[in-house]
Length: 557
Image (tube, rainbow, N blue to C red; front, side):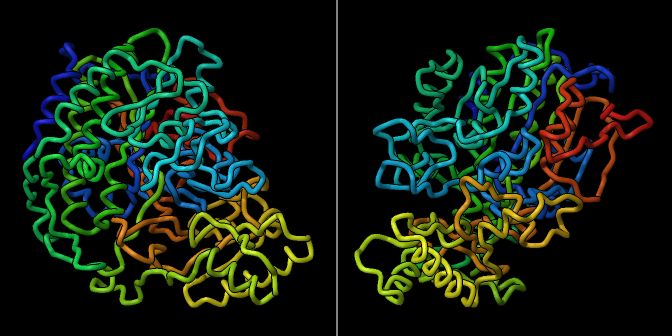
């Protein structure tokens, strides 16, 4: 497999000097691991895991030989990056965590743009909306203050202050939602290197890594070789205005750092940063257990830019497998007793142009007129509401919609009723739920695959932040009207292709088993907590501990 000079350079920066290997661990189920490695692979759906599982030969194969829950669920309807990451290390549904979407509307804030990013602190004067992965970046302060509940790492530090809670990710929202407010070190990608919280200084090893990245990122790199299992995916699919996907092998021309995130190189850099932090802080080598959360983002960027079923994603799956294998080998070499959990924040849907050729003729892009601005103007005209101020707000065509607070109450009700009627009648809309109706529903329990759409929406609902109503689209409707901005496919629906994710656990000596029954990502925190002596009170959690012992012992006891 062709590797870039950047990967080679980064490997040289982070190598350990240890000589132990995985077989040297004789871990006992009753002995807490010294390091918890919680990995989220952004947009790594259960469908991708199932499709490529037989081709894994390295890191993902190791995990697939551990404890496998192939039908894990991000149970909520708002299947986006921030809500998904908020469930993994907290054990609560995204609505209870306060993270109802990547973005939402807060009509009470002072700034003109009422959109709030899940990982910003909009209370800071002079800041503006715009996360670092958006096309237009705002000036904002990255923060986990919107997260209403503690993470596992924070709970561990409360009972064991000497434990370290660390997070490294490709996106700030992934690092902050998994790490929480109380982190010893936290890093995410920004520009051409890794950044950290305002007012903090990066560790020397991370600073050195950033220098190595800066020296290589603008240089040309050869295309990745096409693995045998990917040959059948090498088919050009046209979309938009003369553009195509499915025929690209990640060749990066000179000066093309802007496409770096949508290539396998990106995950290599994230794992290099994680390894640098582990090395410098000697995580997992002290008396207390440490936690590191790792958010790998390349799969998501590739899914958005190229779809989930082309050559690009096939190569990414192969490279992710190898990158994780190198990462685990380094941990093994240091002799660290670690437990790995790997899951995803959400799944994903392929671009409709390819789906329509591959057994889903109904696949389509959303009507460009199905949005808050257009519908709001139609409603205002129908109701003879004067002025040019919006009467309806939303961050996108799906999810939470908000009615202007500047209108009298009776007029607000008429606007809401009229907007709901228009939207619900649209052929691409599956359901519309009102705020008060969702508030009256109990937080669901039981198997998430059988939840009603209202229950899925309830798991994403927060009474203080959710909209006046929530819009859900029909299956196979992609909520991207145009591919002009570079995104051809996405996620965010209440359907299982976006909700189902693998949940994998591995520790040296673990007894392999596979449990096909459905579990949820909110089960991860109590499961890992039981291994390290952190018991989360039942009334503070939505998940339950999964027994991953595989034998007569019970890892939850």
